[in-house]
Amino acid sequence: MTDHLRPNWPRSALILIDVQNDFLDGAAPVAGTAELVPAMAALAAAFRTAGRPVIHVVRAYLPGGSDVDLIRRSAIEAGAELVAPGSAGAGIPAALLPRDGITLDWDRLLAGEAQRIDDDEYVLHKPRWSAFHRTRLDELLAEHGVDTVVVAGCNLPNCPRATLFDASERDHRTVLVTDATSQTTPERSADAELIGVRLLTGADVAAALAP
Image 1 (cartoon, rainbow, N blue to C red):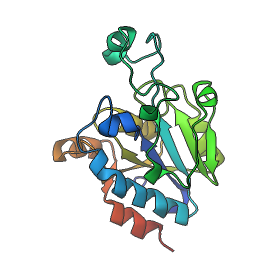
Image 2 (spheres, rainbow, N blue to C red; image 1 turned 135 degrees about the vertical axis):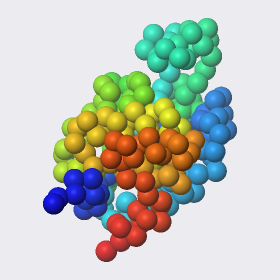
Image 3 (tube, rainbow, N blue to C red; image 1 turned 180 degrees about the vertical axis):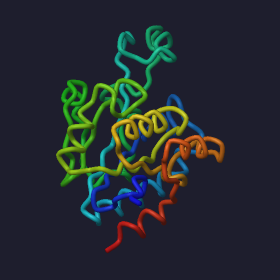
């Protein structure tokens, strides 16, 4: 009997979600995220070494707040600045990037384009919770022959969880890296398992990717 949930590592991609400076120690820090950046960096390095795609998915809130998720729209409309395009707070921590000197191209990102920052490494902007909603993620994964989506990053109950559900609905095999995703709890992990998400540590994933 075929195990349709088992990760297919030669066709996997890493999705790092909302790991931006404002969510580490800036305007809206998410507890536990900054401490996990080294684990996320090690995970990204394992994917690069294996020649598998790494996709950073980021948020950006424009002044005025017209295209902001409802829970934050009033604050942005009132003038709050959070992951504003071009700000330091919207940037990705240097530890997660493949090399020094990378600048996010917010004009391209906000236009829905994928910014390639290295071989098989990209940045995408998402306007809502899921990394699949109104983005090129589906297309990018198809271009790389991906059927296994590995998720890590910031605040499991929000964007990582929404992304895992949407990946599952597209028949991707799904993995949550529990020690590289903030706000992970046993209860939240158990909920993910109910839709077939495999729960692995960064060490598990690195071992699976190794030749």
